[in-house]
Image 1 (tube, rainbow, N blue to C red):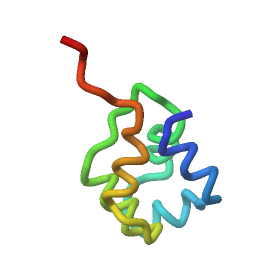
Image 2 (image 1 turned 180 degrees about the vertical axis):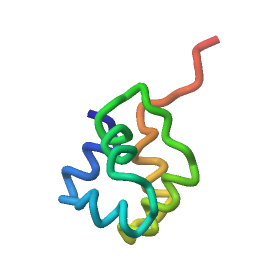
Image 3 (image 1 turned 45 degrees about the vertical axis):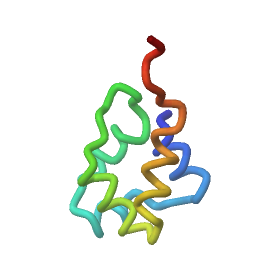
Image 4 (image 1 turned 90 degrees about the vertical axis):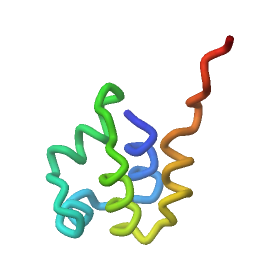
Length: 72
């Protein structure tokens, strides 16, 4: 499960509602929530944040936690 999927589960977010509000298909939302190899687009993240009434900056930080620059 991805960080976005964990967030959906933690907040009991209904993916069907998010899909309806954003126009992002339920299949795509499932991929974003379950497959760590699926790339989340910024536009998708922004629309999801608006649909769930969350600050887009917070959601961005939440789903990107653990990502760091490579060590030199």
